[in-house]
Length: 455
Image (cartoon, rainbow, N blue to C red):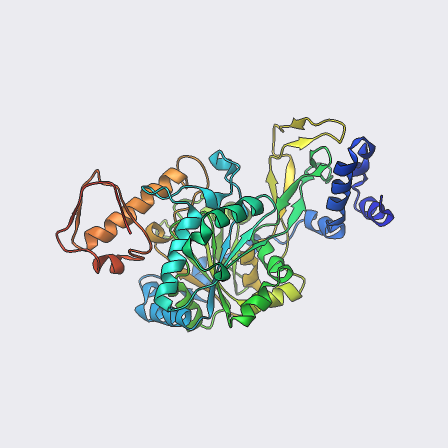
């Protein structure tokens, strides 16, 4: 056993991880010790201590210094500016895909879920089709960066290879892996075991992007291609057709370093981060951090903290690089129920009866605190936000498919077509990316009465 590692574990109060270690098979023990050596034990202590609660100082959204509301947010001028930037090759897409579909009843990466209502194409296939069409219109291949985690990396890479990168140039697609942090017991602060000879690990959150870009050499890769703007989105929202030139355009029109799209929250208890003003700077805080103020209303009865974070951002590469060079983003503690082993002696895993563990994560939206101009742009909820968080009900695979069908039906009917009430019509990105595109493809008076994919 490495003496330095033993001292680090002792200083961190984690020597219990070495108890019964002699019971492990030699190969398992060697792998376990290597896993322990990769963990930042000093940083773990800082992370477990918890961070700043910005929500305690949050002010209502109207106080935001930089906010674009609808209908101004749909400006054709901003869209044109964004399309010009895509054509200039200054924009890349970042898809954050480190999560599995545990709440959807599967251990597969979320990106492999067959989300589309007729074709059953996966989220990755859907996003690839959008990037392919945007690339065709821009006259150049738009780089696509996909951030995986230790639990999604191998199956995601395999899927991309099996699908021959969905018809994209393999040279425009890069997969890289985010970091992970140990899961700790809420009561004792002790790192949990996922099994004999296996630390319980959790991906380090979407804010892990900052360190992962540095570690994987992505900043240099982007600089070689003269990319200075990243369109960021999370893998579980099929409403996103990356990269959206409208949001990119607003980002540059207003000289923003970080721009985020928000939509109106439907209820105070909705599990969404919220855009707020904290001491004169734009911030996003998780709904749990707003405490009782999350339900505050104005004189008309509307939520004061209405601007829900959709997880769609535009980021300056320089802002990300500065964060990577500095101390990085703060840690957040998220209390979850995590199955764990009692030690190395037994292979049995115990299912807890309560939320027994802290998972430690970083949030990409904390970068707003470092931005001189943090822009907030209001979107259309029905068009921009169809998240897949759970198996049924709101924010589910079922609701996302229903939302997509309603969206496509609206595009066709706005173009003068008739869609039978029982028809199931899916529109592929290569056929149309918007209602305006659909209007140019459909004859007024056209009738759709069957299940069909327009592509």
